[in-house]
Amino acid sequence: MDKEVYICLENGQVFKGYGFGAYHDVMGELVFTTGMGGYIETLTDPSYYGQIVMQTFPLIGNYGIIKEDMESKKSYITAYIVREKCDDPSNFRCDESLNTFLVRNNIPGVYGVDTREITKIIRESGVMNAIITTDPRTVDYDKLKEYRIIDAVKSVSTHKAELMPSNEHKYNVVLMDFGAKKNIVRELCKRGCNVAVMPYDTKAEEMLKLGVDGVMLSNGPGDPLENTEVIEEIKKLVGKVPIFGICLGHQLLALAMGGETIKLKYGHRGVNQPVKCLETGRTYISSQNHGYAVVNESITDYGTVSYINANDGTCEGIEYPDKQAFSVQFHPEACSGPHDTRFLFDKFIKMMGGKE
Image 1: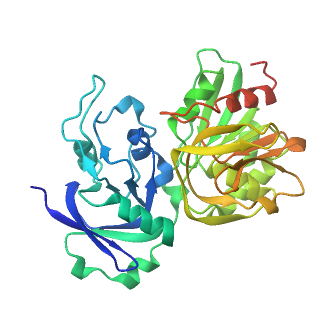
Image 2: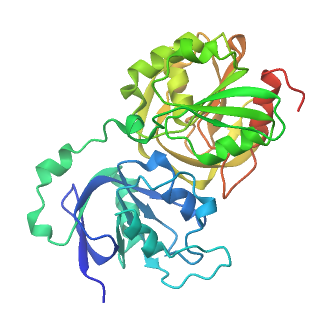
Image 3: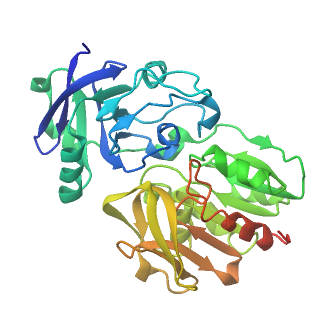
C-alpha cells in the first residue's frame, strides 16, 4: 500500500489520499483540467509551470507515457492529482508508466481522493493554493496563502536559439519561446517554415535582422503582466512583420497594443472549450490551458475581438488588420486534439505571402 498523503487547501480543507511518483512536500496553485485524453500533453505542457494539476477524468495512465507525444523535454508541473492511476498501461507505443515518469521528473502524485469534490470547491471558490504533504499538522497556512508563481516564462523558455528546419523550406519564422509546445513547431515545419526557436528575452532588433517572414508568439505560463520587457519588444515588432500569437502570446500581444488582462476565477483547461467566430457565427471546439484572459472592452483602438468563449463570453481571439497580426487564446496546434482550428496556421502562411 502506498503512503498516505494529504492535500491541504488554503481555505483549510484537507483531503487524504495516497502518494505515488516522488515523495516530498510541495506547494503550488491547484487547477483542474477536464480532458478525457491527452494527459501526456498536459504533463509536459510548460504552461502548467508552478501548478498542481488535477485531472477530472477518473482513470489516468492507461496508455502510459509515450515520449514521442511529449510537448517538451520534461514536465514543469509541481504535482499531479488523479482519482485512479493505472499501474499496468497497455499500448504498443508505451515507453514507461505514469508512476515511473513522475519519479524520473521528481514530481509527487496523489491518487484515491475525491477529485469531483475538489473540482466543485475550485469552481465555486476559484483557483487556490494547496500543499501536498505527509503531515498536515505542519502546514503554515499563512505562507500557503502568500504563494505566488513568479519568473514563470524565464523558468521554461529555451536558453539558446535553436533552428528547426523544414523538409520543404519556403518561409523563415521566429518562434518566441515563452514555454512553447513542440507541436507549434511541427505545424509550422509541415507548412514549409524553417523555425528559429528564440529565448523569451530576445530583442526585436535581433529578430528583424534575420530577415524573417513572420514571428510566432508562443503559449506559456504565469501572469502576462509580469513580462514587461517582453511586451516592450513585441511593440517594436508590431507592423514590421506578420505576427501570430497563441495563448500567452495572445495576451502579450494584446498588452503590447494597449489592452488589459484579468485573472479568471478558475480558468479554462481542457479539450472541449467552445469558441465562437464572431465573423461567421460558427462555433469550434478547442483545447485550452490558461488562467488569464484579455478584457474584451480594452481592445478598441487597433484591434477587433474575433472569437469569444461560448460559455462565458471571454476573449478568445483578436485581429489587428492594419498591423498584419492576429492572435487566439486557444490552442490550434492541440495534440491530442481537437484539430478544428488548425486552419489558423494556414492563415499565418497567407499573411507571410503564401498560397496555402
